[in-house]
Image (tube, rainbow, N blue to C red):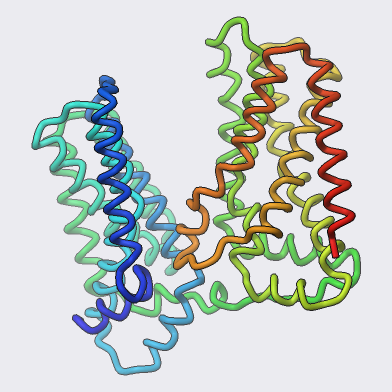
Length: 405
C-alpha cells in the first residue's frame, strides 16, 4: 500500500510534490493577505459546512472522471496488486490532492474573513474529508448502475446541513457517512475506478469542413463533465436576472453576459488533448480551418446559454429590444474569438489532472476582459459601446484570419 500511495502521489502531485508545496504556499499567502487587510464578514457556520462538502465533492468527482491518469492506472493494473489496498490508496491520494490543491484555498479565505470556533473548523475539515470518501463511493455505485443511491445520499447530507444547521448534527452525519463509504470501498473493485472509454483518445482528421463540428460534438458528448458545466451555466443564467434586480441605476444585462462566458472546459479543448493539437499544427491548412470552426462552436454554446439568460431577463425585468439581442451576439462572438486566440497562442501546459486544467488562472482572462467591456457598455451610452464592441470584434477576426497559418 505504501508503494502504491507513493506512485500515485508522484502522478498527481509531481515528482517532487511541487503541486502540494505551491498550494500550501498560496493558501498561506492568501490567508495572510486577507487577514492583514482586516476585511471581516459574518458567515453562518452552515455555509462553511456546505462549501466544504459540496465544493470538495465536485472537485473529487472531476478527478474521478478525468482521463489524464487513466494510462498510469492501466500500467499499475498490469502488475500484481491487492484490490483493497489499491482502492484505499487511490481514494486517499485523490482526496489529499483535492483537499490540498483546491479546498485548502477556500478554507484559507473563509478562515481569514470570519471568526470561527475550534469545533466549527474541525467540523468543516471533517466535512471535506467525508466528501472525498463519499464521492468515491458514489462514483463506484454509479459505475454499477446505482446512480439513485448517491443522489439520495447527497440529498440527505444536504438536508442535515441546510435544515438542522447544528455542528453536532452535521458532525454526526459526516462521521456516519464516512464510515458507510469506507465500508463500501472495502469491498469495491479497483477496476470500478478505471474507464477504458474515458482513457481512449478520439483523434480524427479534420480536413473536411463538416468533420470539425462532428469531432467537437462527439468530444462534447463523450465527456459528460463538459455538458454538466454547460448545464450549470444554464442554471446560473436563469437566476442571474433575479440577483441583478437588486441593483438600481445600472445596466446589469451586459455583466451577466460576461459572467456566462466562464465555460472553462469548452474553451480548453486543445490544452486538454495535446495529441489533437499536435496533429492540427502539423497538417497543412488545418490551423485556420479548425480554429474558425472551433470559434463558431464556442459561439454556438455561448449563444445557447446567453439565450436562456435573455429569456429569463425578459420574464423578470421585461423591456427587451433589438439592442439586447445585438449585445448578446456581440458578447458571445467576442468571447469565443478571444478564447480561441488564447487557446491557440497560449495553451496550458504541465497540468496533472483535468481539475488543474479547468481551475488554471488563465480561465479568468476572457471573462475579465468581457467584464471590463460590460462595465463600459452598462455605464455609458449603449449604442456607442455596441459599435465599439463590433469594431473590436472585427479587429480580432482580422487578426485571426491573417495569422491563421
